[in-house]
Image (cartoon, rainbow, N blue to C red; front, side, top):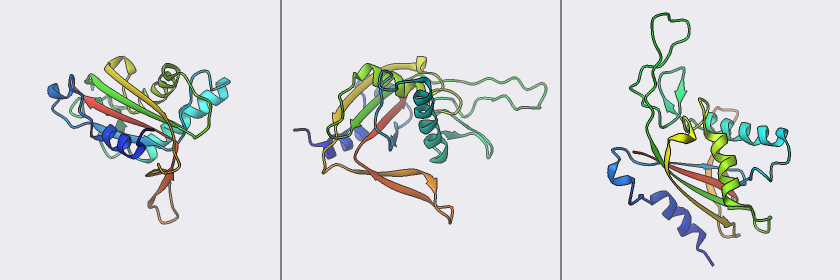
Length: 187
């Protein structure tokens, strides 16, 4: 049996032997408090859109993106020193520098749930985290991808930021046994 706690810790501490030596930046790790879903598991367009909306909402509410200014955030692999288009400002050409990335994914599904193809699960998640409101500019920027799936065990829970704030405006945490984790290493 896999030691899930150790697996989760090693996932966050992992340095890719191929990509990390060429990087000037530490890896960014994020955990999402929802069970993995595959493209085939999302039965219709409505479920697919809801899955993407839940992922993007978590990205925004937990401030997982890189801050550019007090008004905007961008995907983590967009260079923050680049000049971005400013709406309403004529003459400023938008140019975004995009870094290539090495990505690690960890899918921990609920105990006893049906198994899913890892390629379909990966596709569903990467589609949800790409774009202006996501973690990655475009999944075409991924040059190396590692994926791991596992079934949750009762002894494994992780505490992560919740995608909401309490009445005092403080971001709460949630403890989950099924989740999706991503590690992004800019190279």
